[in-house]
Amino acid sequence: MRRAEHLRFAILAAQREGNRLLTQALKPHGITPSQAEVLRLLQQHGTLSLNGLGQLLVCESGTNPSRLVDRVVAAGLVERRTDAADRRYLHLSLTLEGRRLATEVAGIEELLYAALDAAGEGLEVDAMLAFLHNFIDALPSGKALSKRLAPADATTRTRPAGRAPRKETTMQFENTLTINTPAGKVFAYLAQPENLPRWNYALETTEQTSPGPVGIGTTYRQTRTLPRPAEEHFRITEYDPPNLLTIDGDFGPFTGTATYQLTPLDQHTTQLVNTFHLSATGALKAAAAIAGPQVKHAVAKNLDVLKNILETR
Image (cartoon, rainbow, N blue to C red; front, side, top):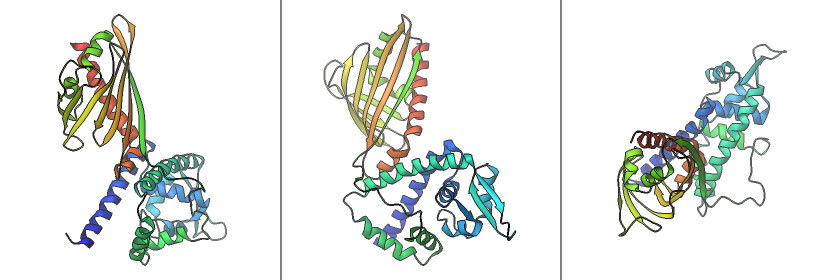
């Protein structure tokens, strides 16, 4: 593959993956990346004409984004008013709900930008930007971006002085559930990692690779089928029957620890608190930055399967 072709598809892949991650992060808020861009532009400018908004849009090309605006107006996020002096012109501004949601979007974007800062650490990012601008500046999307980067534009954003890019992107989340099974039996099942594929749909096999009984330092190898086929390794770092089990190693595209804290509620009922601390490197930093809710939801579904197995044994 020639370098230009490689570059073309690398840019396309980065754009698609970035948009996919942003789409997932915005989904709980009921908006798309294009709609989020409208909210942020109106948050930064206060009021824009329809044509003025179109000139600044990068996610959706065209200087008359009527259908896009129709959708955010229908959702109660943007107010559309006719110009008092010339009824041919429309003024767009955020509603109270639009302002609230724009602030949520800004937080999501900041996580993505921090991940990109970290991924570009030590690289010639300015040279990369110069190359990209050399290619896009004469094209519609490039012109829209140039308007947003103009020195007089109040939306131009710079990193606050003294703020360093993040060197590592991490996520932490916790799921809690009640299992109608004694704590000893719950711990015994969890302390046999060979059971993992029975309640984690993404795993195919798990096997012990170190000799001796299970305890601190015991190591395992497992094969994963989702999100892509992979071989993973982990070890037990905390082992306190029937209260605490912690494993450290590979979890799909991430590395980190998973802790299982068990608390007997009575002789037949156990509260399980499952905590994950995960980190990512390279391009996966962007995923770790904004994919936390999706990963937590997938883990919760697996724990529901575990609960069902233990309560029906």
